[in-house]
Length: 174
Image (cartoon, rainbow, N blue to C red; front, top):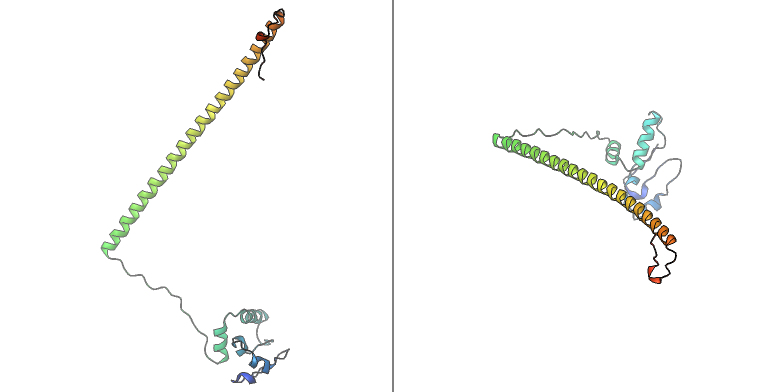
């Protein structure tokens, strides 16, 4: 299905399309994937596996594994076991426990402080809202009183129409 030689100028791939080996040899690009044969047909392998393999090769994944397999070497087996943790001494255990207790206390103090601040802000908000409500009520009462006094004054001026003194004429704000 493919033919490969060690010399760059003689690399030949037999696929659906043909690669110009002279142009490949003349290019200054390093031969990364060009060193590997490109399979277009995996007749004995499950189609899903072959599609995954082609995708991995095209995306430059698993290049080392593929190269090892083409050279006839075994697949790399990587062991991801964790190192066993060293046993702590008594002094280190006490230090860790002290740190945990200190951290718990600090966290508790922080939560209490946050709760206290939240309560304080809620009380302040309620007081300001209450003050705002009472001030709005006071404004309404004062406007009503002003309107009453304006009507009384208008009535009085109507009754006392004989007064034509310019100093006695008043203007009222709205």
